[in-house]
Amino acid sequence: MLENKIALVTGASRGIGRQIALTLAKEGATVVINYNGSRERAQEVLDQIQAEGGNGSLYQCNVSDFDACETMMKDVIKEYGRLDILVNNAGITRDNLIMRMKEEDFDAVLNINLKGTFNTIRHVARQMLKQKSGKIINISSVSGILGNAGQANYAASKAGVIGLTKTMARELSSRGITVNAVAPGFVDTEMTEVLSDDVKKAACGQIALGRFGKPEDIANAVAFLASEKADYITGQVLSVDGGMNI
Image (cartoon, rainbow, N blue to C red; front, side, top):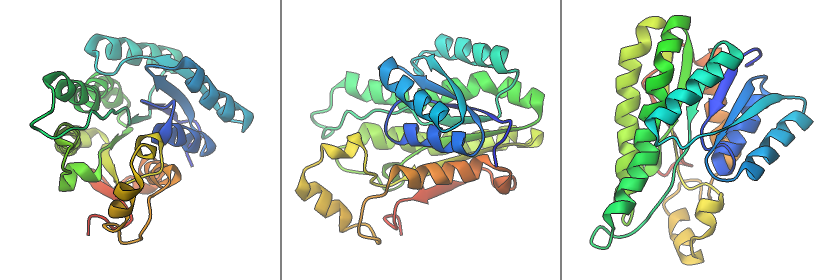
């Protein structure tokens, strides 16, 4: 479905990003695995892709760094000649009630989750416009739609991603570039493993399907939006949340 496509997935060394990278590779794309922290974990993702017959490479970059993102995009395009799919998945949490939230924790989440998404789109837009094609998929969150107590920074960043998605869809559509967002609900990853059983139970009570999602659920949605099957879809937010946002 994605043969001969070049994809870059930010924050792809673990969790949802890891599964997105694996899924896009299974669909035939060559995947650039962006990571910021652990090269070892990123290498494990690449090793699995290659073991399954796929292709990819690693690229270390903190997406909150505007200049570093520019260098990353130039290097990727120099190596592969193009970039067909950009998945903005890199994200962090620094949860706390607003009265206790530190300024640096608010800034850190906005810088990675929202500014990082801006940075990568800003530096790939010219190439995609030149190609007259491209698929940009931004990972938002149900928290960016509904809000969530204790996540003022995270919810604000993910709501911002939705606004950015819709605006970029309007700006880039004339050249055949689509920009969409996927908004996961609660997903079984390291990020949710730290939640107490009581919190998990309460969360499941808000989900129509009564359970947390799997990383594969999000990755499959991303793969669809990255494919030609979604050529007439842009500026949309696809909620993959088990019915939490009904």
